[in-house]
Length: 208
Image 1 (cartoon, rainbow, N blue to C red):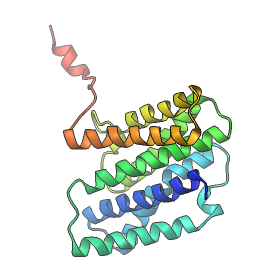
Image 2: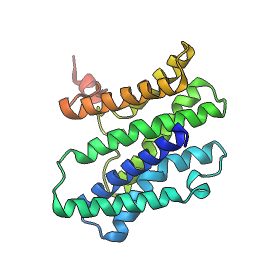
Image 3: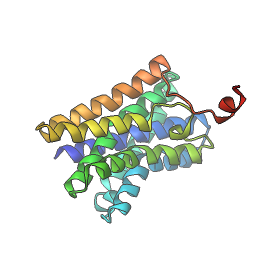
Image 4: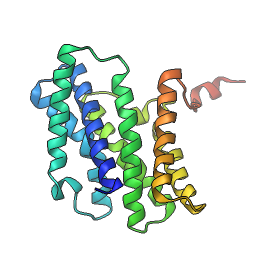
């Protein structure tokens, strides 16, 4: 099993957990949990494959869907016995973001796309599932929440993935560097409430 496939499976599983927890907070039923877990887990990869004119990855290998269902059901069982920490959704999302983003970057690179497009595909792969999750749960998508270090973490991590290889790093090493940066930035933002500067046009207008 190559690294891309491993990252895809882990990313799908972690994002499914993230989706199931989000559905639980909205008090959805079993069908709702499975739907939210599924769109969270496969949304980014599906859009990536459609944009790249590839066969959608879970069409080729339905075992991804099985992994999603298992992860969602195990999450439901787990929370019945032990209440998850308040930030568990964000932590699960951060890990999925790191793995899925670099998986998307490697797929784009394998298609011999330019470095900038590799970074864009990484961002789409990592963030679009979360966008669908938040929209369906009637939340402002995390990628659009004011000052959130989210897509910016993918931008930095995926850029380092591309740059590291240009300096001679092996692809697998560059992948771990990219994933580490994305996860570290996102988790640091969660734990220390770090945010990006906000462009507030109204505040600037009020200044003399």
